[in-house]
Length: 390
Ligand SMILES: [Zn+2]
Image 1 (tube, rainbow, N blue to C red):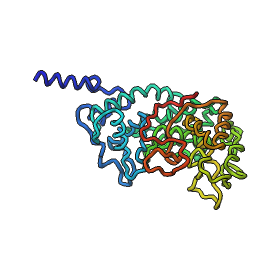
Image 2 (image 1 turned 90 degrees about the horizontal axis):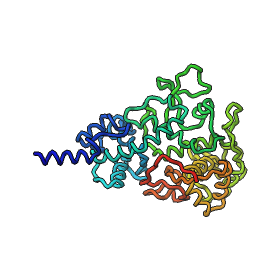
Image 3 (image 1 turned 45 degrees about the vertical axis):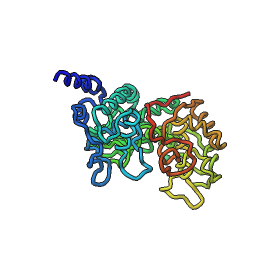
Image 4 (image 1 turned 180 degrees about the vertical axis):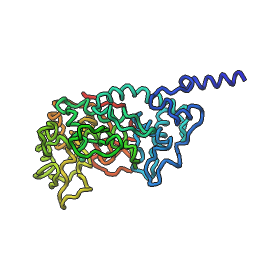
């Protein structure tokens, strides 16, 4: 009897102090409390998808999935394979990296490790979130979703490493969100606010792109891919080929004429189509840059010119190491790097975060494209919420 209690005590201590959860994200949450109290949860929950095949925030599997997102894991793992099971694949990847069992269960040992990792990141996420202009105006999120600080940090991190000339006033930030930047604004009841200026008395709220409590997602891009998306959309916003507004000085503030000439003949403006000057995808940093937005067709023989600018800007900041290495491959890549370095006031980035599979990465199973392969979509990558500069 006595030795049995000692064994029990020892195993409880091994879990980090009476099974207590340290992260704000997990502590006190009913899904987490039940697991720590000794009821393992099978992540292979039949309720994972809603009746219209979206990821279901109402099940505990989503809470833990949101935990892996916060911990920097790739929540689109398996996207190039058949099956809607990134929640199971990311659990397996986490367990593999942590040396845990390979069952589909979230048990106390696994959750304690996830909790440790999230707790170690929360101060960094909170410090970033404090810089986000809408941190006190975040729409109320689903209780099983990531924290509002996590959403805010996705948006604040890129701006924390860009030159000060790209800092926007609050009015311009609102404008950017409404016209181009990632995310949207709603009133307190969740109605979309789609025009600026906002009514002076409106109680507006910020909603992250995959975090609207009223909208279930068919996919959840990882935090690192989300940071890249913030940079990509901001690049479109600052593209000097777009329309300028005197009240919003950051909008269309970068002269991109020369950039477009690296890959296209006679591009007219950022929304335009033009013939490519070569059909070699290796002259583009990203396959999406090469293909353009194919949902919006160009005439035969022409492509959208503006996506490579946005992809290159994002890659320069978020995947600086790979972009720098790719300069050896094609002169167009080298010229883009040099031009971006000038635009970013000589800043260079020692960053290496992953991109979405549209980038033409080749380090995933069944890659969607075989070129250019400069960027990574590694399924084992873990983002640490940092974009280091050189
Ligand atoms: Zn774009």
